[in-house]
Length: 394
Ligand SMILES: *Cc1c(COP(=O)(O)O)cnc(C)c1O
Image (tube, rainbow, N blue to C red; front, side, top):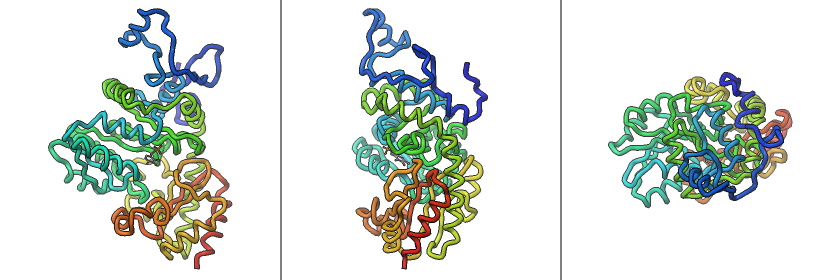
């Protein structure tokens, strides 16, 4: 059957696909909420877990499982759990791992709603969190407490693109018997495979690179062993944040082009980052392939390519950001990332406006900061659009 030594591009096209009635090349969409039992004893053995099969779509569905198996294979995991959004995946994962009164260490540069989930929801259950700069390994070590059970990292971080050393962090987690969870949304398994570096669990917003077409909201958790899988599956079934068969089908379709999309996006990004670094209206550029990136060396060690996310600071601050946003035409002024279309946004005037200037400063969100998610368009067209918008800044 499957050749374990297949290369990543090949796995993207074929992973997770099984044999189905009538021999379709693509997994059928089993758009059904429930599955018939052959008899009471069949139903009983499915419920007891003695026999493999499907009962009810919240508990499992062949279309969803095909996509889950594909992502698990691409990440080098044992199994995966498809969720209705990245946030559902993160919530299910943290709630499964943490008990009342335990301690969590989390990246400071974490996705905004993850920060809010930790501060507003987990805190209700007396789970304490220390937010640290996870690009500084000493800061992680110093945050450890006797009851630390989980270290949660996003790398590269959002929107600062700071990079945490996953191998070194995995050693700390192991030494204190805590689980290391990594949000791999920004890189995808095409560029970074945390499980191979000693990380225990990977989560994703599949809304971004994995689906890649800006038409689905979905998430996933990838685990390394059966025990964790069983624990997470029970929690997911109880919390109910599952993906539906149609979205699972769309994500599985998107995965087939993951490798080729990312390759083009990395290539475009490098050219755009270099263009920006030489532009007189740009103060600085953060992109992991640039030697000016503070964790350039760590990036080289753990990335196969440096992704499609670029942050840069405009010299004119807040007003320059607004001017640029209002003059792009090809680059879409929108949040989210990882799709085939180039997206641009200015956190200070958009996503992080309500945070207030001081809190923004603390989170590294300066007034002229612009975030770009580079798509697969011809790079000359993207640069021409950026160039035109930058020329409007006075
Ligand atoms: C978008 C995103 C999430 C949340 O995912 P949703 O699918 O929007 O719920 C989590 N982490 C990162 C890094 C993201 O970019």
